[in-house]
View (cartoon, rainbow, N blue to C red):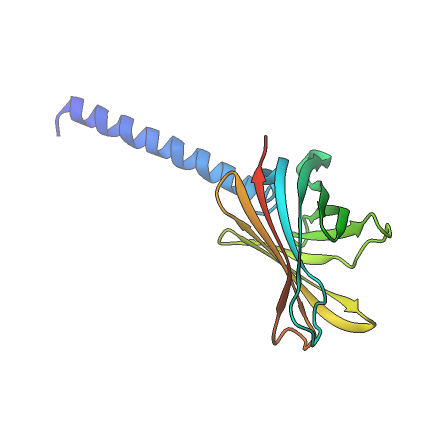
Length: 186
């Protein structure tokens, strides 16, 4: 190999090494999950469907709402808060979702409070794998224990889908009872 070819090869390999080092440095900062919700910071138009009577024998009746969802970072993005305000023919839903990152466990907790009663629901815990967020927890519905699953699907930079499901049989089967689709508004 001639000297100019060696220099070109060395230059190309140097650029590749710098690029690989830079991308692996960024990956080490973000692969722990702490920045998993950064894409969602901002304002969104949201449509929500809520199952009127989850885990019941009654026929499925879906209630429809639309409004806004605003996501704000807190504590250097180790936490964030979602402010939800939607309304429809059957009323209004206003609530907050406080999301907290637990660095030791490398997971998030999602804690929802309805402004109707001002009470935090039990948290669901989890994180993102292969672009899908899955968060699980325990709660009660009508005095009986249930499992709760919350899923987050990022559908590009300007759209996301959120689904909540309940299980009355320990997680063997799930019934989706909340579907929200958000589209970035700014």
